[in-house]
Structure formats: C-alpha cells, structure tokens
Image (cartoon, rainbow, N blue to C red; front, side, top):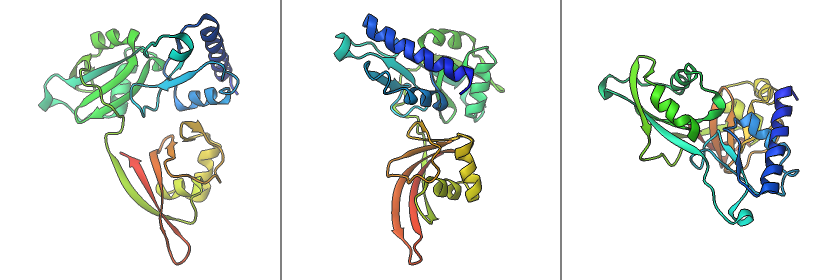
Length: 252
C-alpha cells in the first residue's frame, strides 16, 4: 500500500468518526474505483456510522461517500453535486467529442480530478457531474473543447443514468469464471486475462477483484480498466460439447 492509499484510508476513518461524534453529514470528493475499494477494505471498521454512495445518478462510476443518515441525525442533507450541461454554441459546427476530449479540456483549466465525477455524452452534448463549489468555475471558464466552442450551464434535465447505449453480446466460454469471460469478450488469451487481475485492473460491483477464478453471477457489473465495462447476464444455453453460451450487456 502506497502513501496516498494510507492517507486516504486515514481520511475516511477521520470523516466517519467526526460525522458520528458531531452528528453532522460529511462528504468525500469524487472517488475512482481504486479509491472506493479502500473504503470497502475498512467498511466493517466504520460500520457504526451509516454510509451512502452517490455520484449524480444511480449508476455513476465515480461517486462521493456521505457519512450520516436521516435516521441517525434527524434531518436529510443532499449530496453537494451539480450537473453541468456542456453544448456547442453552434450545433451544426460541433464535433463529436469523446470523454477524453472533455476531460482534457477540464484538466487544462487546472481543475483537480477529485472534484469531477462522471461525464455523460449524448450526441453532441455532455453532462458533467462535479462538486457544487467547482460548478461556477467550470461554467465561467470552459469555453472550448478541442476545436468546438461551447457554452456551459447548470443542466435543467439531468440524465438519470450514465448508460447511453448498451449492446447485448453472446460468447462461448468453458465456464463463467471471471478471467475466462473477460478474455473471451476482449479477445485476449487466458494468461492475458489473468494478468489484468494481477495488475489490479478488474473491478466487480465496484470492488477491486484479484480472484481471477471466481465465478460471475447474474447482474454482476464488471469494469476492466483500459478495456471497458459490461454486465453479466448469465448462461443462455450449454452446447453438446459442454461449452456455455453466455450473455453480457456491454457499455458502448
């Protein structure tokens, strides 16, 4: 465990204790999957204080942790998250921009990644989740993404899901082992699939997973850093030779 990971664990423990002791809601900034896994490692240790995870929609990958609950404190406090709509000033001249394009433009403004959540792209418009404190800075300063001049404002209609498109795929595998399914889906050898687990690049249901031989269950959400995300939907049928035809929904 490196110094940054140790410090984040310590920070989470401090927030949990302070929230419980002072009877006040406390929030982290946006956490990546690898950072969220550190929370799961100490989840039992801080189980005395209720915790909620949220990133702007029900299925955001980058989320904040809120310590506290209405039942414990007697009042509710929403997450300090804003959603910004980023759209081309002139629609017909707008480029088809990628997640990397938007993130790069934001990073060039000197913004810390931890203040930014997921970015949802719908055609030529992007929806950025960020901390409330960062929202006005983004709106005032983000004027161009690649060659496209953009306007930013607080979104009137916030997307209810980060999933803009999914594709159902069928694969033939020897078993529903995690490494077997990942290798088949991304056209990798079994050894390459195993290496992804060793490199700590596989997350199942938001948790870092290093057990490449574990069996996937229906509804499991798998994220493979550098490759993509999918939801395991189970076995469609078994062939005469004992192969399994599995179904997965791939995030596009």
